Length: 253
Image 1: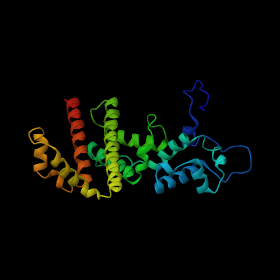
Image 2: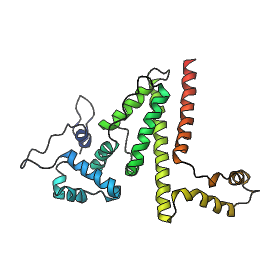
Image 3: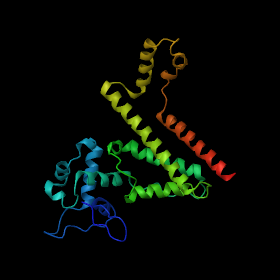
Image 4: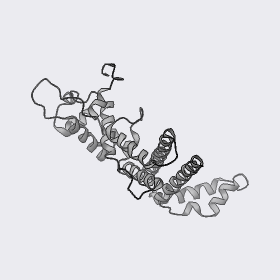
């Protein structure tokens, strides 16, 4: 339940208060052995080991050797726990751009840092996005991304839009890579064999007269190449940054 709104601004939900350290421990009862951060860390360990589906209040309580109901004195609901897990799961932002970085180098480093987090913790991709970033770590990522664009000719709204475009691309690429890996495991096929097998199947199905462009791709052997997924990520990121660069030049002139 949200706190009451007053003249200082909108009400801050309990989960956000917890993330920012604004909620004190429960005042009643003996000195507790549980903490919000301890509960969240335990939940992240479960997700790292067994995936997001394995996370439940009872499983986390078991990890901590505590009663399930005791957790609810600190974390009000599963949704609140998930929000706090995302903040902890992302971890600290990559930091502001280096002094010798231009805006493009800064954003490349920022995008690759997020890409690596989502590669290591793909369960983050399964947590529903319920709103814009508001927790400390996530706002730290946003701040450092925006600082990469300091000194450019972009308006402040365009800077936000650029970051939204980049992070959306990073998440989409990470989701695709994760799902392909899951599909290959389920099919008992190595990830490197997925595209060649797909190409061979498509070649049996299509008529070159009906699908001439796709036939040319198959004939060129594109599907048989064992491409590094990082190459695909780099290609897409570079095209997005090319577009942002064009916009910066347009605003400058």
